[in-house]
Length: 287
Image (cartoon, rainbow, N blue to C red; front, side):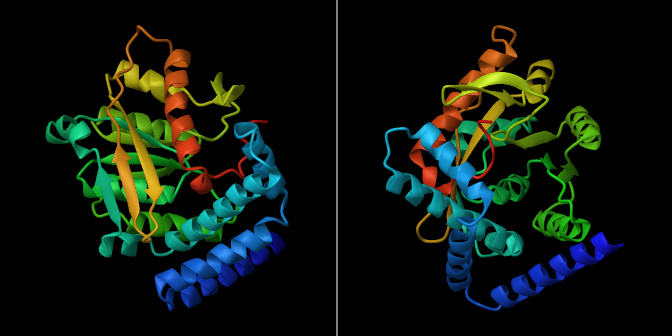
């Protein structure tokens, strides 16, 4: 009972904050939230995690250079959370551009189910609704928020951002495994964020360190002959976003799942190295 009251108060405060910020022009509310997260983020234990992670990836940078990257990451996280409350408007205002459509033209034209992957960079929440607007039927897994009031609010924002009712979100766990397999059998595509730690996963090298990584989707790709599409996401200086579709990867029996995951890690390493300010360093990835 007490926990529910606390959860509801948390939800109410956040909801009021979203309402107030939505009354302001997006560029102004974005700056306010970025400053807020930059200031208060450094007071949390996640800031130390982010610093440690960043030093691991950039061992030759100075402490000041590391701090600059992590502060920018806090700003990006704040903007992403703010934009989640207005996700549909990002598309209504045509704030998302795309490159590399020609790399997946045959997939789109022939309606071939595929596995699209990205990482927690820029605003990762735009990926699924963008695919949905390309008339790609896609299922995506999300992490359940402990506060069920907030979880319901966030899920509603995600679903509301979809243009069709053919795509869906499913909470991580036994239910998502069933939902994703059912979707694949119905010729739907999958979208995954693959840069977070998976305690049930395999040990795969990322930035010269062996870490637990999800590889289950590779078994699906091989079994159902689904191409794997790297989907890079970048926040631009003009407030818009750029999604870059890279050439599809075909996973055959010639490569083990571990070897294929190493190749995919090489791809996302390049994304992070080229755009470190917009990656989610605060996750305990290398522990």
